[in-house]
Image (cartoon, rainbow, N blue to C red; front, side, top):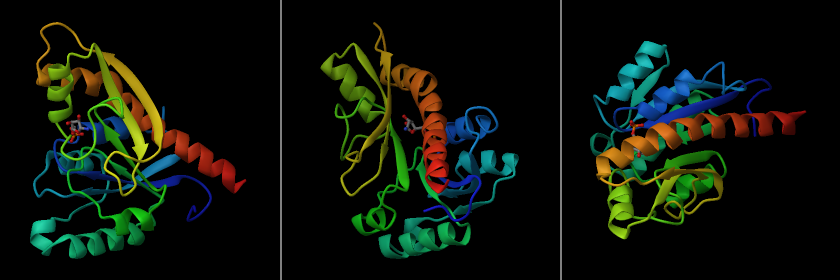
Length: 206
Ligand code: GRF
């Protein structure tokens, strides 16, 4: 599984502002001890996440499905970039391009995602960004949160790795709730999940 002994080599896939990417970068040397971030891939030209990668000195590449001419070309280019950087683990951090079943099977148990709800609530096709929070508020739940899970061919359907609950408070808007879930759950869970996987896989090597 690992390319070589030592640190797990991680690629972070992004589409937007990159606050989850920043949380991962900031956790290097503290929460994250056994992994290194070797590549950032953005599906969105000009995403601020690319600037965060640049400031941290992490190589990055932009791969736009539209510009590459479709899903097949996009995934071929993504696989090539991942192989060239000898990536062990792929982290979807606010990444908005759907990956095909062919791709997720090829990287079985090597892709994780952060979803802004307590799966199986408010997840699956169509629930991304603010939509999970809008649905949570519409249903009137008093607790929501975030989930880190392995990615398979079912949207938000892979094995759950970590979850953290966050309260829903009176007066919450989708935006306020999104921010609380990011601060109190997403930015904490994602670095923890990376370290957990890195530690497990390094133990397997021993
Ligand atoms: C937020 O919608 C968050 O809930 C979801 O990704 C978005 C954050 O994106 N998981 P980013 O990490 O700031 O790019």
